[in-house]
Image 1 (cartoon, rainbow, N blue to C red):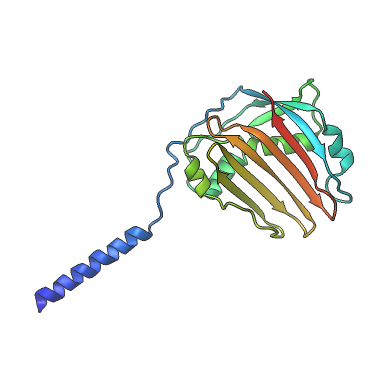
Image 2 (image 1 turned 90 degrees about the horizontal axis):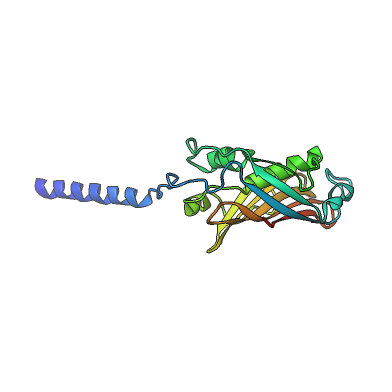
Length: 212
């Protein structure tokens, strides 16, 4: 009887350990992260702008004159990966770190408000390569439709590109955000879209399309 009782305990222990092992999440592999983009790299983006918004934080008179212009972007900084181990640290250390400066292609400086936006959205779309599946696993596929006072990130790993989206929710009729399509080989964006939706109007939208 004692031998059977001991055997039963062993079986229970083995089964319990096995269940715990199965339930453990697969470790995320950040050791393969690397920058293909380099400090000193430059990109050119053509700008398209359209939409309506009245009474909010941004107006057509600010946004629409950007249509049919272009900017030159220089990479000035690339963060390390030492502190990256989850969604929060990837967001704070990689996505939301400023990595660039930019001017109009003719050399004219951008107004401060749009320079701030461009630095934010372009920097957010310059990502490290080498661990796309691990990055994608950090975030959901979709952002919530509306979460007042909150922000959210979503990502989707496609066969030939990586999609990232960021939303910042204000009141029920005031939302802004950006999204980018990113090269899997270089980690550099080739299309970025920023928008501001206020009230019942068509969102103010700026699209950056990389040409160089």
